[in-house]
Each structure stands twice: as structure tokens, then as C-alpha cells.
View (cartoon, rainbow over the protein chains, first blue to last red):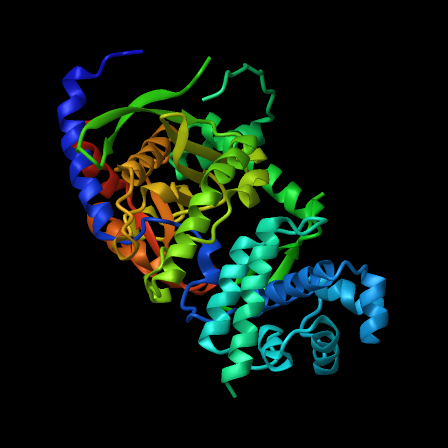
Length: 165
Length: 70
Length: 211
């Protein structure tokens, strides 16, 4: 390893100056991966909606201890449709499907419609959905942390339903 | 940079001429030209294996033509 | 034989210069570790931003990035990963491409350049005043950018650089890095495209006393 003592001070001066310039900007990031949030308002994008809706349905089903088949039977929906929803491969779920799922899973139908991307969500629903998405991870069983995340999200949906239009 | 190995390359006169011309045009050493060629070839190969196609576009005419890579 | 070298970054708390390892030749598996280290901080920052009701346009624009998704690209000859490690954690990472990008600007038009595909400092280093985040280290982005310019010279591209900046970063690349903006690129999510020409790179080398 070569000592750089002679060059250290100019290097340090340069670094200080550049670091100040970096700090003056919120970010120095380069690249297109962040396009999901560029120009986005505090609303769920279509992709985010699908993910959150699918995750919520999956958690609600698992919270009841149901298999996909059991949910399909209870809600009178095709098994394939539930699988697509939970894997968020369906573009937008059918309104009937959303209402059926809300009924059997005990979720407020009008808020679930917003989460499904079928209606413009209220700000509180957006915020709760983003928080839920950040905290939830797909695993076989609901962990205590997942259950907590799920219950918090449902609380907001129910609260919004009680008070709102 | 990673450890390097040496290879002897036999080129025809025509190939050497092209190599020298590209080297002059791109202001790169002949070795750098060949490195770039290898990088490009691998990149194209990977993308075409994925099922992508390569096109060239003549912007002035608004025409696209497919380039076949074997 | 390691191609890594020792560089210095700045600790925010006391302004001291700290030795860090500049890693050349970041491997795909390193990016898996990078994201494993950074995902928790990203999530915490997201929670704080939501809790404090910070307007979306003020969120760090790379918050939702995921370097694991970029790992396979490092298997390409044209791709190069560089990173800074300090206190046994990744503090910043950059991916560059030596092909197939060429300069669009003036006298350099058609000549090869190093394209900075992605660059990001660790979320724990981001100063976000709205949520009381001061950040741990600073100067890492600049170090990585400078390494890209050096890489360009080593490749024989005379320091030429191209990149698409996120909106929050435009001022940094235009003013501090002295790059030329060439317009918003419809082919790249309308991000502003910047280039550093051979001439501009030479001036930067001279300013740094590197010739």
C-alpha cells in the first residue's frame, strides 16, 4: 500500500468541496430504477395497488387459516382468480370479486375497492397501504410482525369506512 | 483490473486494415478496439438469447431494419 | 491480487477523514449483500417519511431501488461494479458500462465513453432533515464519480462520461461535476442526459493535479 501523504491535502480539499455540493442536493443518484416514484403523487401506482391488494387478500386468508381452495369456495370465486390476485398477476380484479372477497374476509368493501385500484383511494388509505407494503413480506405463515402490519392496515380501512363516504 | 493473459492473434491483411482504421477513428489502441468488440458481442449474444432482436434505425428516413446476428 | 485501494471519506459527526476501501470489481454476490445491508434502512426511512407526512416530491428519489435486481448485469464484460466499504459496511456502489455507449456531444460525437448506469450512496448516509436524519458519511458519491472518470481514462476513452441523472441530482452533475446537459431523454424515462467531454475531463484532471 503506497502512502499518499503528499497528495492527501489537495484530495481532501477536493472531497470537502464535492461533499458540500452533494449535500446541497437531495440525491446524487443516477439511473432509471427510481422511475416508479418519479413524478408520483402520494398515491399508489397501478403496480403498487396490485401488490398491496394481493398481499392484503393473502394475509386476510391466512389470518382465517384458510387455504386458497377454501377461500375460493367461501367467496364463490375461481381458484385461479385468487391465485392470480395473490401473485398480483391480474391487471385489475373484477368488482364482483372484490366485493365477494370483502364479504367473506370481513373487510370494508368500499375501502377494498380503493386498495384494488378500482376507485381513487383516500389519502389515509394510500399512506396505510404504503406502510403495509413496506412492512409485509410473503412467507408461508403470518409472523407476529406480519399480523401486526395486517391488523393495522385493516384498522385504517375499517375506521375510514365508519367515518367516511 | 483482473489478471490478464496473452493471446496471439492471426489476422488477414483486410482484417488488420479494418482494425487499424477503427483504432485511428475511435482513437483507441488496437487492443482496446478488440476488447470493445468482445464486450459488444457478448452483450448482443446475451440479449438475443433472451429473445430480443437488434434493429438499426435510419432516423432521417424513419426506417428500421433488423440485423441478424449468428 | 486485490485491485482495491484505500481512499478517504468524511465522517459527518466530527468532520474527520476516515480510511475506506475502494473496491474495484464488485461481484454479483456483493450486490446481494449491499441490498441486504441497505433494505432495513430504506424501510425505516420510508416509515419515517410516512409518519412525518413528508411530501412525496421531497423523498429521496432512489428510495425504492434494489441492487439485487442489478446483480446479473455484472456478469457482462462491459459492466463494472465499484463500491466503497468502511467500518465493514458498503457505503456506496456504482455500476458503469464500457459498451455500447458513445458520446453525443460535439467533437466527441461517436467516440466511446464510460456510461454510469447507476450510482447510489447507502441510505444511512443520506441527510434528510425532515425526519432528523443527519447521515453517517459524506463525499462517497463524488469519489465514485471520480473513479468513473479515471476508469474512462484507463480504458482509453479520455475521461468521457455519460449518465442520466435523477432530477434531484441534476444540479450536482451540472455544477459540481461540470458536465453538459443534453436534454431529456425519452428513451430513458425522460431523465436529463449529461456528458463529460474529453476536454472537460482534462480540465478536471488538471484541477486535481492528476496528469
